[in-house]
Image (cartoon, rainbow, N blue to C red; front, side, top):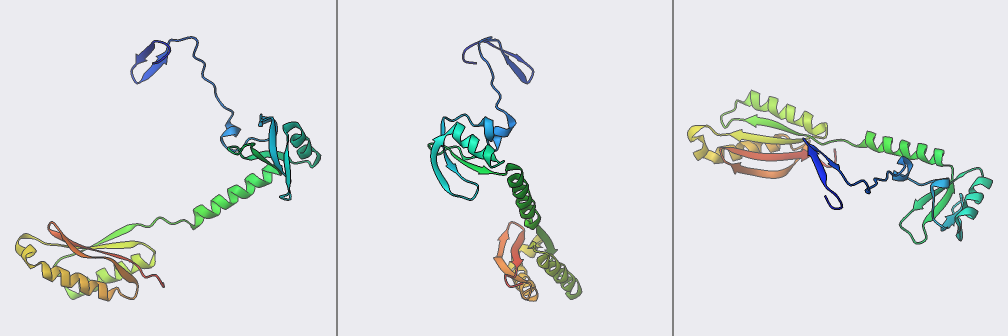
Length: 198
């Protein structure tokens, strides 16, 4: 370690230099600096109704916020000088948390469900697999359809390709073919995605 010897004990290492001082920033600085936390000499001030009030000393900006009974919040720390806005910080945080919660609620993780077929599948079994695939697709998931070849069946890969094309036709009302049938080793794969207009 630069600047002093280090001592290692298991997964931990300790600096033996007494002159190295570790500084911790306050937690609030990880998000927004507000009121007295703002240390800049002057800032570009924006009022609570969005008006530009120009570049003012920090003390004047803090006084303006106190007069309105609001907080002074640094919203653009990288700007020269930093941009601060007068606002109700509690209300701002509440609305921000509400927006994030709504965004998480509307987000959906798309899963890939797999349907396995054999080249000599029976009609009844095929219809059952089609129903399952349509159910997955209507739920918004993608479907990977695979045909596994055993032994010499791989020499008749065209049978698997025809089966996958037939499967795609049966699912046509609820899906679109995202990836055409392709032979990979001893199995042929095809990917279906939910139909755009559904």
